[in-house]
Image (cartoon, rainbow, N blue to C red; front, side):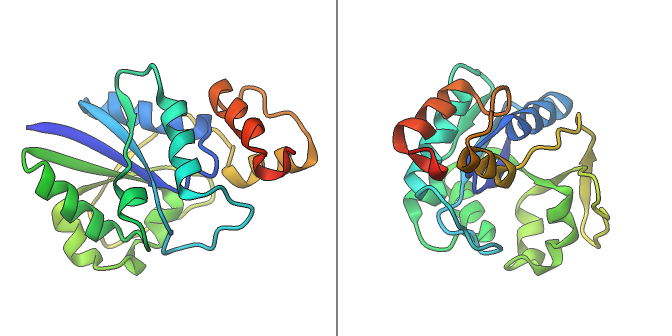
Amino acid sequence: MRRVGILGGTFNPPHIGHLIMASEVREQLNLDEVRLMPTAIPPHKQLSDTATPCQRLEMTERAVKGNNYLSSCDEEVHFGGVSFTFDTMQRLLAKEPDTEFYFIIGGDMVDSLHTWHKIDELIKLVRFVGVHRPGTLRKTDYQIQYIDTPLIDVSSTLLRNKYASGKTTVYLVPDSVDRYIRQEGLYGTC
């Protein structure tokens, strides 16, 4: 049975924090791979100053290119609409019945897990892996396997603000993603 991690998110844009989290979880849990899966429309947050779902997918593909253990997953972008994890994981399990999925979430998402769509059913489909983030409680009634990773205090919001104000993003975003952002004029880089 394959063991595959799924790291969902908006990836608006993807950054080194995402890549370090995915890589650390893969290694610590000895997973076959981790897939970065951009949402089409996230149910938990409003997107502003955003790239389109296809642009966010393109950025995740560029971010993981060349890494044999990380890949991007287009399931939610191609399905479209609001991306509920329960529905997505049902589709993935139907396509890959011999795969055990580990759904990777940050500590902030652990704190709000009780609000997720069909969480009592979803917890039976996947194993949740929680990654510590500063300032989060890590308090939930659901079974979570916690992983400690190097703490990188970078966020997509920080990066969008840096792009908009013309500040450097060197070392925070893979070069291939940075080139795409500037080529597409995303986040005020025109």
